[in-house]
Length: 462
Image (tube, rainbow, N blue to C red; front, side, top):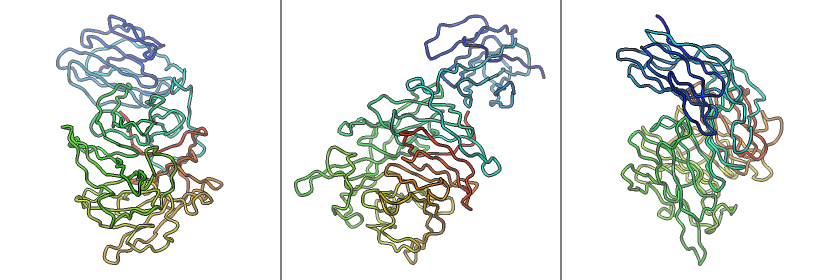
């Protein structure tokens, strides 16, 4: 097999034939000669991501071979069309990135060079995650994708060496708490809502690898968390403000925004006082200027097999599971109806982002003791007949961070297929992958002030 190839070179956009004008954010490559089978090619650098477009004559199968430091160790899927596009995601600013178009016929010339080194997020300079521990024998590699809430909100993807390989920065007046690979678009989906929560401007947006917006869905009163479904539905948390004794209270809803623009309310706290009583238990942290921050839902998960939703409420210290009609299935914590075994009810404090594990347990982030406590991941197994939740695993932050860490804001744990747990310690700014035996497989830290929201592990990016 002969190969038609070209390799990233310098800071210019390459075209077999013509060069193109570029913007400040797009770096061009020099032209390279191609034969008649690869008719033309262009390559555009978008910060840390390279977009390669090429055309071939009919009947030619092509693909991209690429990698870092001169090694062509990554391969895109074969493409048979006359016009093709590939996104090379996984490099970083200053990297020596090389690529070539490979085909079953023909050859092209070769160039080489490196990506610009002018900062991962241009709007705020080089923000790099500091990897403080990395044991490849204990984890499966891949990338982490997530969102940072404060000090400029942005979605990001990092590799296990701490290199920032993709980012999407929001405007200064916007916030986000969750970002993940989109199942509806080829890119990253994230939530975006106004820093001034009196403005109802919430959306779930999908950004392509070049940073362009691929689609968005309005999520009325949305905040904190969302979930995409293959049919285009987007589930999300919203708020509902009502008068209680002459004062406005902010309660939570679980909604589904449909592709046709309609909205279904799955559950509303105001409709279920038997599940969450209207008691003044909340700690008003000022998140909602519209009124008293009553329930403060911050995360949810969905059990597709059983059609159940799991919702976490920080301010009333409760985790609630409901069925598809909004009916009560299970709950634990201050407002819970199930018995706890292995943890005191009072230690379900500031719960965040309860999550189903692959074997049906519930993993929840809590901070026993509140301001004086250390944040902890707790895993509970359920006994539906006895209506009991029993602690089967727990991991205090202090066990592996070298000191107490207390997160009043955010925090999340997600069980991986290999049995490890990926965890964001929220406002502490620490990310870890932890084994079942409590060993640290990987650890990294953001600069002070970059509060991390949800974090998700993915095996590969395109």
